[in-house]
Length: 184
Length: 164
Figure 1 (cartoon, rainbow over the protein chains, first blue to last red):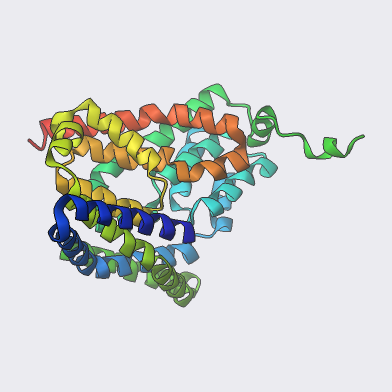
Figure 2: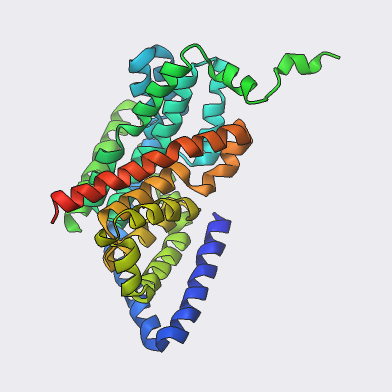
C-alpha cells in the first residue's frame, strides 16, 4: 500500500508540474476541480463498496471455498472454481498462497487455472468499485464480455492437462519434490 | 450516480443481514470494510488528483488518434498494454480509466484496458513468479494476451453496431 501511495503521489506531482508548464495555474486548478468533484460524488458509493467488501470477507472464507473446490470434477469443477475464484476475497498476497496450496491438496491443474483466471477476471468484490469509480454500464459490459474467459481457459486446461494435478505441474515447472530434497 | 449508490447500499444491507443470520460476524465485516476504506483513502485521493490532471492535460488529438472509437485496433492494443503497465491496485487504476473515458476513449480501448490490467497486470507478476515460477508466468501472460485483445475487439464492434 505504501508503495502505491508513493507511486501515485510522485506521478501526480510530475503531472501537476507538467500541467503548470503546459497550461499554467488554470490547467492545474481545472484538474483539481475535477478531482474534488469526483471525490465528492464518489464518497458514498465508495463507502457502500467497502462495506460490501468487508461483509464478503467474513461470509466467504478460504475454508468455505476450499470445500466447494473439492466437491466437483470436470466441467462442473471448472465453473465452480472460476466462480469461487471470483468470490475469493483479498489481493495477490492472499490468493496466490491459497492457489499454491492446491499443490499439496493434489487438485487438478484445470481447477487451479480456472480459479486463478476466475479471481483475476471476475473478482466480484471489484464490481462495486468498478461501478462506482468507472461506470455501472462499463462494469456490466466488461463482465458480460469477459465472463467466458476463465471457463474457456479451464476447458483448454482440461483438454490438454486432464490428468495433471497442480502438484505434477509444479514439478514440471522445475520445483523439486519436497522429501527428495532430504535424500543425500 | 445516485442509482448506483442506492443499489450498492441495498447489496451492503443484504450482505449484513446474511452475515447476521449465518455467522454473526456482521460487525467484524463492517470493521474490516471501514478499516480498508480508511487505509486506502490516501491512494484513492491521490488517484483522483492524478485522474483529474490527466483529464485536462491529455491532448484531444491523442485521444482522437489513439484511444477513441475511430482509433480502432490501435486503441485496443494500446489499451491492453496500457492496462498491463499500470501496475497499481483497483483504487488507483479505476479513476485513471474513468478519466480516459471522459476524455473520449472508445469502449474497445476501455474494455481491453481493464481486461489487460486484470489478466496481465505487472503488479501481480512478482507473486506469480514467486509461487509458480517464471516459466508459468510467461506462458500465462502469452495465453492471456489474446483474451484481452478479443475482449477489446468485441467491445469495439459492440460500440460500432449497438451504441452508434
